[in-house]
Amino acid sequence: MGRKAVQGMLALIGCLGVVGLGSEGAIAAETILLRYQGFGRAVPVFDLATLAQTGEAPDSVGGLLNMANEDPATLQDLLTRNLTVNPNLLDSVLYSWPGEWALDQMGGVIHPPSGQASRQALRSAIVLAAAKDSQISLLEVLEHYPTPQVVLEGDRIADAYTQLAALLTPLSIF
Image (cartoon, rainbow, N blue to C red; front, top):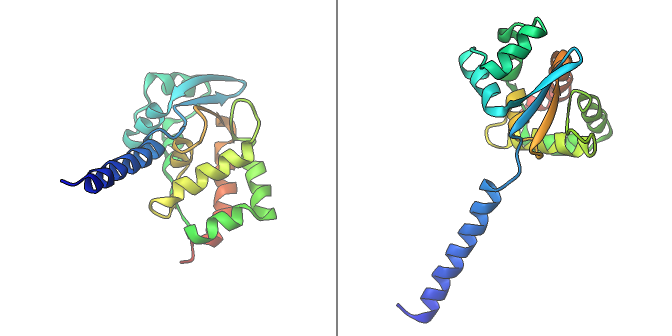
């Protein structure tokens, strides 16, 4: 094999490595600070995904839901309800005045622990959630949230879903 061929292969391998690092090494929420009625608990995203898939609340979630007198089936429904969107319109709408207003409202329910850059983080999570299949669920938004931890105000999850649906439903026309 010639020197140029080897250099080309090394360049290709290097590019693939960078692409791989970009997708695998991206920051995504690992822990949800789930809060209900003034108290909360750090819950691994995996545990919320388990609840969403099976309907069974792992101990980390179940205890908190029990203390808050919340039904796990209600949280499961809110986590898994899908909204269909047109991803070509989504990004531009989220940068419009109504989109930014809606992001600010939802940012009171889903936000980084620091409270800073909430709009940007939520916008990123929504766009990433829609990118793969033109579907968005609350669980996908949480899984794509671009900080290691994200706060979810459990008492207001239904409000966040309603706000997200109101913003995104007009974008579901393909």
